[in-house]
Each structure stands twice: as structure tokens, then as C-alpha cells.
Length: 105
Image (cartoon, rainbow, N blue to C red):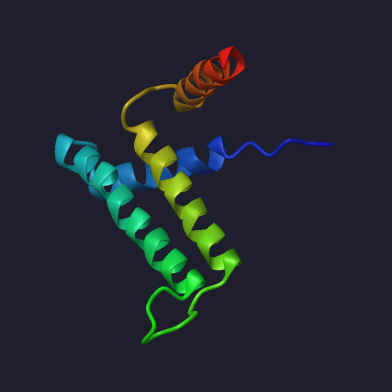
């Protein structure tokens, strides 16, 4: 079984943004702020999934919530590329630290 590596695609996304928008502090900040927008879209999809708004009812599916969560993950990965030269390693190190805490519990 092969394991999908998202980092080549994520690096292409980040490189494209670098070319189009630049790499200054303002762009770096906007990439972080983009996460807020994406999280808002997850919230909207979840509210629609559970039908929390009685006026609108159920407007989203589980798959749409999952797709919005994926957008958050991709956006975070792209932003991470702006803060480290080895984002894959940074994420792996963080996951290992969190995993170690779970193993201690």
C-alpha cells in the first residue's frame, strides 16, 4: 500500500502564492488569517449539517463538512511553509510530541 505525500502539492501551492503575492510579512500574516476564514466555513457547514438554524434547516452534508476541514488543513500547511524551510519535518515533530503525550496518559 502506498502512502500519499501531500507536501509536493502544498509546496507548489505555496510557491505559486509566493510568486503572485510575494513573501513579505503582510503576505505571511494574510496566510495565517486565511485560516480564520476557512474555519468559519467549517463552522457554517457544520451548522448546516446539524440543521441548527431552523429557518434554513439542514443545508450541508457530512462530506461537505469533511471537505471544509480539508481546506483548513491545506491552508494551515501552506501557511506553515511561510514559517519554516522544512514544513514536513515541523509537522512530523509536532505530531510525535503530541503522540508522546497521549502515550503517557
